[in-house]
Length: 246
Ligand SMILES: [Zn+2]
Ligand SMILES: [Zn+2]
Image (cartoon, rainbow, N blue to C red; front, side, top):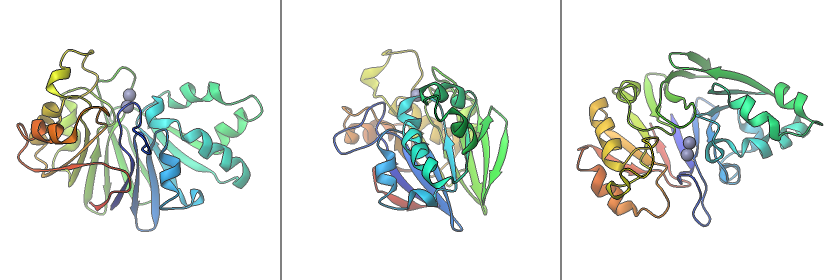
């Protein structure tokens, strides 16, 4: 599998940056995994919009799904039908912003596949398995397999016992680390601190952790330092246009 980072900022983007989004490609198939605001622009540096074969949306917060809207409006011109795998209720949350003139097409041009914990689905070469998360709305943490390789993507979640299970032995664990130790108690645990992301990676037994969804003011060198207090493996950062093999 080839992973391309389209955006990685937590909640809002830095200048010339984007919120959460990735391309996952294998065997000629292109999956757009999270469509946060700004990612459609970066996507077109790598593929044509018409090359997107399927979409996965971890949840209905705009920093993970907003660019589905402009993608939809170009789909009105092409008529291409794209399957969308997502946490439950994403379609219902997004549909009200579509005008009455194209609500029917929003339901038809996207083949919606809502997924809850324990659900499994396949598209192209990819097999998805969804796990529970601990977020302010339903989030689908996903384990994706293709030809013997495994990637786990946390989406947005606080610490929860299902997370190391979802990431167990994955070749790459893409995990959010929104916060640092100084942010402890900032909100209910709906996001991870860097130490908690590292602990989840350690408990999952992975060797490669790609940290994503960092709160923009938090410096990456400090995120790395705090992550390394709980995780001995390789720590990478998701950044726009980064490409890596899984
Ligand atoms: Zn988010
Ligand atoms: Zn969120």
